[in-house]
Length: 600
Ligand SMILES: *[C@@H]1O[C@H](CO)[C@@H](O)[C@H](O)[C@H]1NC(C)=O
Ligand SMILES: *[C@@H]1O[C@H](CO)[C@@H](O)[C@H](O)[C@H]1NC(C)=O
Ligand SMILES: *[C@@H]1O[C@H](CO)[C@@H](O)[C@H](O)[C@H]1NC(C)=O
Image (tube, rainbow, N blue to C red; front, side, top):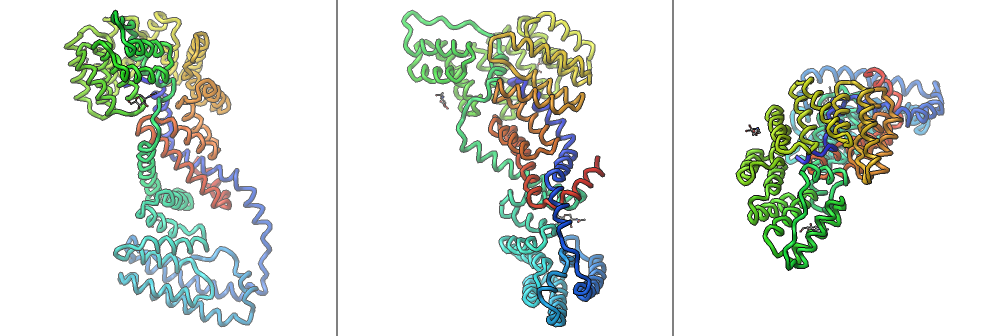
């Protein structure tokens, strides 16, 4: 309910991004080409050609075995249960040439015997597995490993499947076996999925995410269930991390832009008159309110705390101080503390409608709209002509998509006091949302005329124009808003700059211009979440995953509420996992770029 315009930019950005989620994932994958493509070709050309005279016999044996297994594989697969594992054969990726050279011609027959013995043990293991005799099957795979002349990833992966199915499942062993299988063949998708499941079950979400991400990309994004695993684990990981962060992190005020927007959502009120024999606390409160007016929020917060500790001598003043401390608590995320202060404030001075309205925003943050509406009713009982009440009730209705109710309440707010720019702007936006395009544009034009020196009407009008893809007009409005912001004393509201960047990107795909707008915004206000979020997405679009991860980490630091934090963490972990993939599978670059080309 803070009406933070920053929120709206971030939200629009996010809906834009979630619509394009898969595209972004692919775009990121394509970036692997840039990172690993050169290395891939270099290593291919360096590999020595296989020597036919030594290579052939081994190759023949291998071919025969492979054929047989493939047939078996097909037959079994047809009557296999869905989760059934096992029968896939992994063809070793590297040519056998090397091994034959090492083993030498003499050991050739011996090797065939041992290979056959291992294959037979594996087959028995598969049968036992299908009879759900998992301990027996695991033992057979162990024996297959022991006799096999060389380590085979499939033995480990199959034994891991046994451990998954034992009761209770032996996740540690699953992980250990999949580690072995993946050491032998890092592209072994089944082993990746199996290890992912085991890690997820042991709440090692970061590892699980790494594995499911790799499996998804290696499967060329075709396996819906892998993709769902990625999303599921991401959700668990992000909410777990968010909870940890919220418990441990130091509470502090959000960015200047955010706090400014919050306080701007209330009409200014005159400073209170101190009693004749004002106490120290009374004077401190006055200083706190003056710091607030000057936009020095941190100082104002400290002074507010002090004033209450020193003691305030009259009830209305104390109610005012509690209102302010409650507001700061709300802004630093201490919702419960905020409610206590604000309620104490209304107990002392029930006609302090601002406190009622703020309690309503606490209820909204806690997802309880009926209670919020009760607060508005209560406030109206005490002061039916306070325009703030109707503006904020309009905001709640707006959030709940009741645009007509919202428009009525904004209109009422303006009727009581027409000097507050935000009720005009919000009315125009609500009209737009309810499909009254002409009314909305007319309201905007009136507002621009009535508030020629305010940047906000320009900025929001620009947003609507952008929504209608009237790019040139939108950019003109953002430019005008930036100009007005620069003309007033600092600190500057940088949102029009970020909006201009987004507009240039959507209009001309001009990433460079978009980035320089955001960078400029961040130079002015390093805590502007909208700029950080936009930069993160732009980096992702260009496949600059490392930079994107860095920006998402910054977004995580700036996130105020739990949902914002979860959202930022989700992107941070998703892009981090893809970065890890790029490092672990440099040779996948070529294939990935092909997928990306197909999908475009
Ligand atoms: C897709 O992945 C799941 C594991 O997430 C696996 O069980 C399944 O066999 C895979 N499907 C295909 C068609 O590869
Ligand atoms: C003010 O008090 C609140 C709680 O009473 C505390 O969380 C906050 O850190 C204090 N702020 C300052 C700047 O002293
Ligand atoms: C404002 O919203 C309330 C609550 O939905 C509604 O009852 C009322 O009619 C609206 N309009 C005005 C002018 O208060």
